[in-house]
Image 1 (tube, rainbow, N blue to C red):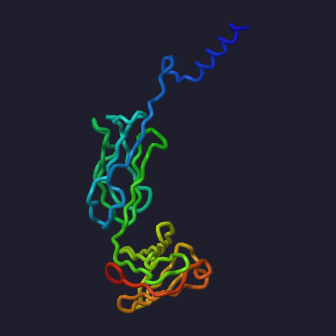
Image 2 (tube, rainbow, N blue to C red; image 1 turned 30 degrees about the vertical axis):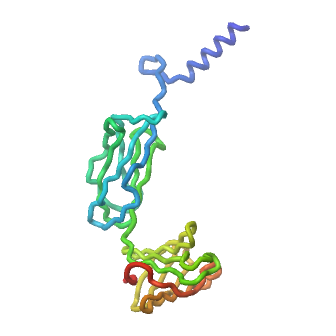
Image 3 (cartoon, one colour; image 1 turned 60 degrees about the horizontal axis):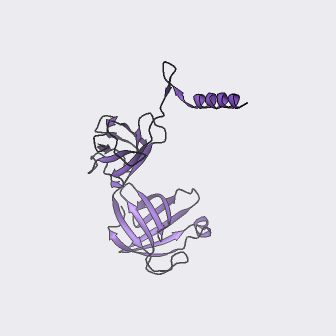
Length: 226
């Protein structure tokens, strides 16, 4: 009986091992981890190369740098071109980098270890900020004055922020002093009127029902959106 159990255990162990081309067992691939070092959240100007390269590092399961690892680079959203041929190869310090020229202001880029599914990191670019308006008085969702803000970007997108946690995005257009805000949520709209350094915002019914409050905002940074 003991002999039978021993034979069964050996069979299971052999089945769990990978076999080489000659049928002999091979060691499992070592664990490789990728880390984003620098280059994320850069301001993108379409047609101009990013000011800093995108840099990653590959380490093993013990935190040591791994040289000779091939890293592929790709665009997952937006448009642009890498100025560095892909893949790149990590050096003795486990690091490798790529340079990139965006053709849209918002781009998402992926660096991945070649042949290793799930071993990747993401980089994102942001458009140039043109204006930031803040609410000078408290609202229901932001008690301290100024914690609610509207940011306008050069690619005609906007972001409304409540405190540190809630962000809402969309696109805007301007006709004279009136700025029309269209949220990603299709039924939310707002009309804002520019009066000097003030922005008077009125939301539509659906946005009001979702908690957005009409009110005045004051220009804190930049110039009124164009």
